[in-house]
Length: 320
Image: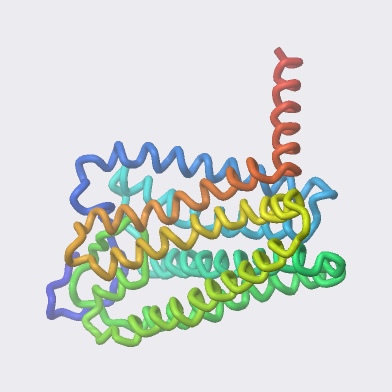
């Protein structure tokens, strides 16, 4: 049942409505979303399989790539199956507890990915600016502690937000005009003052994500300074190539996030379905493209991907 604007009610079930204004096209929108999700699952699972099973790839750079693939799988699997249920079967019902759980994993994945990208920038900094100490600085023990720090930081940042949201009293409607549970969309349905939610989101954006971006920029500033001091042009090109895939992933992660944030801020002049579509593509495109970027630009991974496909093709040929 829906509630009016004056009745406080305890939300038991919410209904995700999909992308408002595109209801007639939901079935068709779900097709590319499904294809992107399948590519995300296959690509990231393959990257994880190759890195975990190939002993020579148990190096810092590839271990960070495996962390990124894990975060991508968590983000997409938390959101896309429910999206497709909404698009294809109009199965938008989700419990309040389920909504909070989905919201938790979505935001944890986002914060974790940002931290992983920062760790990868540090990895490239040490590899290029202090290569002689690379193996002694980034040991497996240090990488394990960095991974634990990523998880702990993400949990500590998002868990208070879940508690704050759980304390809200809702009085408007149980219709969520989205394909997944996003913090501010859910908070705006409350009849309580949500200023603390707004300011908490701003604080996370500036103090956490903003700080990550600044530190990544500083790392690459130092990297570029070291690269352009190299005497050989070939050495400079080789050093820059080792950073190419990471820079692409950084742009794919932060640029859509900025556009999505701006679209939310200027939602009064941008059609709602565009804002909603940007938010959906944001959780689809980076997880799909990240394994492609690393698979194509990293020779060691590309070589093993080709070997996997060759072995699969050989076995299928023998069976036939």
